[in-house]
Length: 189
Image (cartoon, rainbow, N blue to C red; front, top):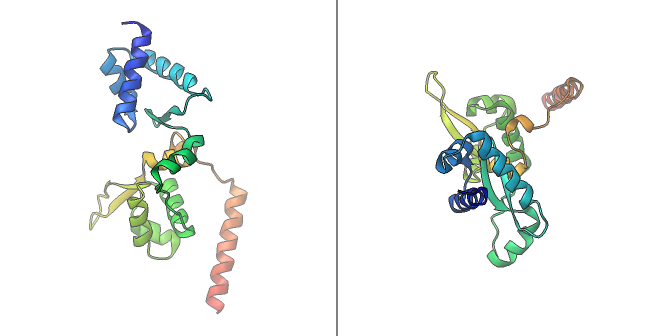
């Protein structure tokens, strides 16, 4: 097979699957080494960066997916009439950030950090496919563990949770002091 045929096969796999496909599976399907397959995919990714193409190939935690470029969204809205845009409230964003940075995490651990029940927030995030159940903690009651999904990575434009921004110690200390002051004000009321 010529290399051009490899590109066509990879393109067909990514287009048809609709979800991300691990590099290992793609390499196995085309009978090539992972390193060579990755080179071909990276070359394809560069090709899809052209402004005259409405699609792109993105990498999500060692897997690849073909999807529409964000710039095309407004045109898709006109066709679909009812885009699936989920509103993330402050509560949902707060809960999602806790899960993203502390995963895998249980609801009890989230509630300990937030100080309030998180059932509704976690259920909404699961419904929006930003969070999923990862399994159960080996502890009494076997509570569910939650973590982020590929949809989370896509939505926030990162390839893995390792790319999430980190706070420096000074910011963390400022946030801690603000939280303590808020708690003191609430107790005094």
